[in-house]
Length: 140
Image (cartoon, rainbow, N blue to C red; front, side, top):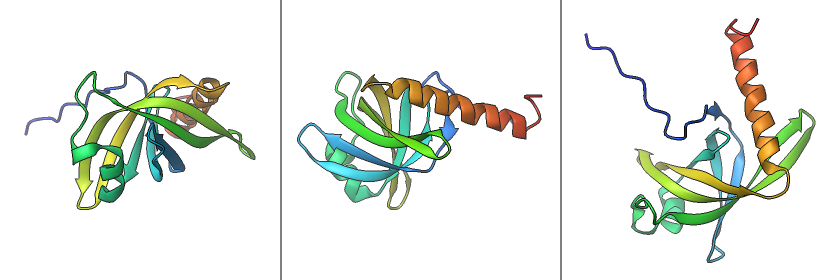
């Protein structure tokens, strides 16, 4: 039996599974709310319906390199468990794939954060990665 090769991490950053809402706004003012699948320091993967993807990605075709679709994202991360903060980040839609009949994943690569957004994402991802290591018994 042939072993499966590990999937390359296209973002060059460790990803953490996250389930939260995200608002995505295109430059034409179109604004949609989708669900976050995972998050890294350099980008975010979202899950949404085919109708939402049609509004974000013309023709349901993954943008070619250099022809990315610019968007602004808004989502919350808990800085402290009881104190979520809103992160506002500009980015580009760089990936799209269909994963079920009416479910698609869209990859957004961050370009620029407003204020302390990058620091909030960085700390949140680091904390989730640390928690995962401790759960697996590797961090002690």
